Image: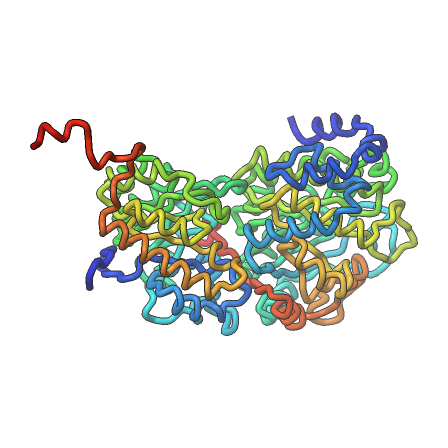
Amino acid sequence: MQDALHIGGKALSSRLFIGTGKYNRNTLIPEVIARSGSEVITVALRRVDPSSKEENILSHIPPHMTLLPNTSGARTAEEAVRIARLARAAGMGNWVKIEVINDQRYLLPDNLETIRATEILAAEGFVVLPYMSPDLSAALRLRDAGAAAVMPLGAPIGSNRGLRTKELIGILIEETGLPIIVDAGIGRPSEAAEAMEMGAAAVLLNTAIATARDPLVMAEAFRGAVAAGRQAYLAGLGAVQQEAEASSPLTGFLNV
Amino acid sequence: MSFYESLMALEQLPFTELWKECGPEDVKRALAKDKLDEEDLLALLSPAAGQHLEEMAQKAQRLTRTHFGHVMQLFTPMYVADFCVNHCTYCSFSSIYDFPRKKLTLEEVEQEAAAIASTGLRHILLLTGESRRDSPVSYVKDCVTVLRKYFSSIGIEVNPLSQEEYKELAHAGVDGLTIYQEVYHRETYEKLHVKGPKRNFRARLDAPERGCQAGFRSVNVGALLGMYDWRQEAFMAAMHARYLQDRYPGCEIGLSPPRFRPYLGSFNPESDVTDRALVQIILAYRLFLPRSGITLSTREPARLRDRLVHLGVTKMSAGVSTEVGGHTGEGGTPQFEISDSRGVPEIREMLYRSGLQPVFKDWDILAESSI
């Protein structure tokens, strides 16, 4: 596979990860998956009810998808670890998105608790993708703790405010050597493209698709945007100039 | 420091003049902001805002869909005991009423739990009358142990407890606390709560904060609308929620706007809370606290509930009985008359028809005793 994203022993051709949380019916999910081309989907364990035939979200996810159970609701590393173990025991695989949030107003992650949870779960063989505030020291600690990728936020969850943390994400891309997956805040396809142009390995989004007037068309739009952004990154963007570059420079005679 | 001090300061506000002074420009200013303060809340609850309900509704719906999605969490209350030592002038469980009181045995609790769980619901709110003698913490805890076999989220609505007692229940698997102040206006509170420990205004007012300190995942507050001027009561309830949210950011603080309903006695409320008023309150709550849950009970009629699901509400009850043992057997005396008696399947269908997904499960009990 050309230009695959390698995480946790898997080669992914799509760099668009999607969520499940805000649709008006779960029956939309298979179609959203098909239109987005996504291969990784995150699910909150708190929403999973295996005992329910009609309302079990997992029954709407095709088997080819990689499940990324998240620890939504965890306020401490211990709770995140417990949720991850419950998810694995429920047959949801060994990937986990660590979400440790102690702030219900902005839903900003607690990096310190996230690092602690990552250390424990990576040691237990989980493929750990931690959601985090973009901070270089924290990202390096997550890398050293065994994270398979890090997922910095572009803006607060569900805010659709775009890449507010662009500078910091850029530093993580340059410095960590890990796949950087921009998670949260991306509201428009153009913002997803921008993240990919910067060199992000992938983007994860939910609200932007789930709350669009037409989620299916929006899923397609994001698919195209992520692919275009990635292509632009691989093609090597031209340098941005502050001033016009003279085609007949004043010192040109020195090279004659 | 507790909300009591804040309340005493807020009581000094000249509400009547403030409501009069609020004009359309104050409402528009509040609508244009992302982060609203006390003055914006006053504006949104003012008579002037009554002329801007549609604009408020549009923004409230946008915020709700962005933060919560197109979903509605479902739950049902489960009454396990109606013994009560208080005399409150607006409640059927009041100690002055002579009717055969009931308290479920643990076997009966299990039967009720199984009946409710068979409808698909996974969130339950356990209710008792207020009697430490008849429904002590140990009894509530025993009930929780039974309920854990059937439900993934257990809330309680019982008499105010100490922080230690709340901790004990949190450890047993309770993740949510609902406790309504009923009335924030102290003079009226004293009039309505004639006898019993509930007369202690402050012990009740501080209970939600003790719940936050005990580590409950969600704490739900509210005023029983109709007991005193609804604007002022809604204002105080929202300020109470904001106070808790500011100090306990890890806790999900929710609000409920219950309206007074007919009950066993003949008390009539002082303030008429019309449908328009209820809508204005819900919208003001949503705009003031964009990420807070707002719970709608079956006190409201079906036709109104079907409309309110679009305006900021995030949780609603379904298949409700306000009688002890009401889901199996004969039941008892209802605490109040419900308006929307639809069962879970009908509510589920109504939500799907309205473009919303019913969410039956949105939590897993993580109490240490469960691991």
